Length: 227
Image (cartoon, rainbow, N blue to C red; front, side, top):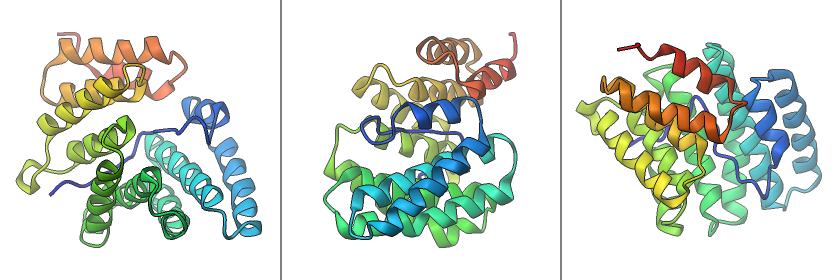
């Protein structure tokens, strides 16, 4: 079984979110992300038939949850992800033919899981089915493969995951989008877990070359042993 989990990211649909999302995530600016979430929550409430409004709200909550996890604030990361799931479900209900709506739903369900291992019993199926549906709808979605890669990274090999599968999906994400700094970042993280430290450093350096403002990428590079 593969579960999509997203603690450190990410995965912006640039045409919808724009640089405001990226800048806040890259700087780990929780207050800015909270302000964005509040604004988008108000917009979604005023436009309750607008799938795009609900998607953007879900995406913003996913970003905020990711940064909370990067800052080791598991309790708030879990709460933010759980709060985003209804918005993603609403986007799917309004426009179920859009791959990104399924991807962000799977992402948010997966983001709950690393905060509490028992959450996998409740949210694992949502994460698995939604990411697979996104890939079915758009097999050229780099972000969907990256979501699955991160899920495999956190899912133990005994349950069908593991870093080897994460590396494969990261490479697929890069094949589809060679400018994906997040795919290179997670490729490096997965390679580090496999003790392939030279390759891991090269991948994360490539991530930082593509996006030098990403604080979390710099922190991950520092964790890789010199030898």
